[in-house]
Length: 287
Image 1 (cartoon, rainbow, N blue to C red):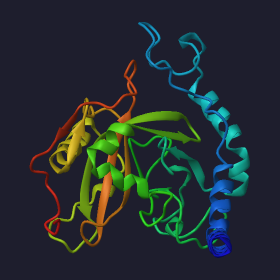
Image 2 (tube, rainbow, N blue to C red):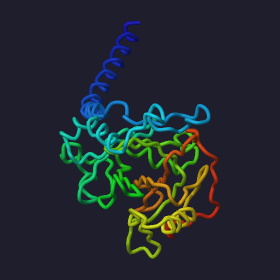
Image 3 (cartoon, one colour):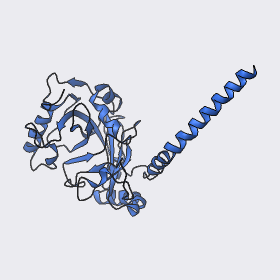
Image 4 (cartoon, rainbow, N blue to C red):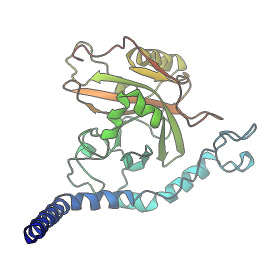
């Protein structure tokens, strides 16, 4: 009996030591992540009302007659972000995918490199933070492109959209910016090569805006050919686009792109019907 008790005591001591080691190793990271998420602003000044009957489905704000002007909305949003903007004026919003680690500030600077490896305070950080393409116009542009590291637990959930089952559990993305708060529905997931020397290189991120609906439609047709799957009602050529891009490891220098459009008036927040593309246009090196 003494031997059993002694053995149990040694086991508990070993487990305790292992737990302490994990806390020492992981603890600072957990604290850092917790502190980062404490910067998230309060409830958005603008929210989407879920369908509840004819006449007010999908209205923004509490009531249609109480709608705020664009200027009033922006003023309210900026007030909401005052604290985090004082910490870093590069912040342009907050990105959330419910029930995933993607609940993070979004930044924008003068290049597409800095926030790959820097944190909210501009200090070096392998994990980086999501950031908007430097050429995108967050306020007026018709296509917002946001990048983030797959290697980071902060953004790696995005690569899970390769599996339609993940989409069905996470069909909606919330993007809160300095100008508005919007919900987007995922409509397509596709892959591209990041190697510009590849013959089939597709520079999706050069399409940061569209001068005409016809230009946007051409782009949408291209994405539809490339998509592993599309969902629900596809994008209309006059709608704004949101594309989230991260690394994926099916091949070297691959990128997975999740494209979404704004939630429409009266539209359900539930996942739409998934249409799998039997022959998507993928990079030649794709396995």
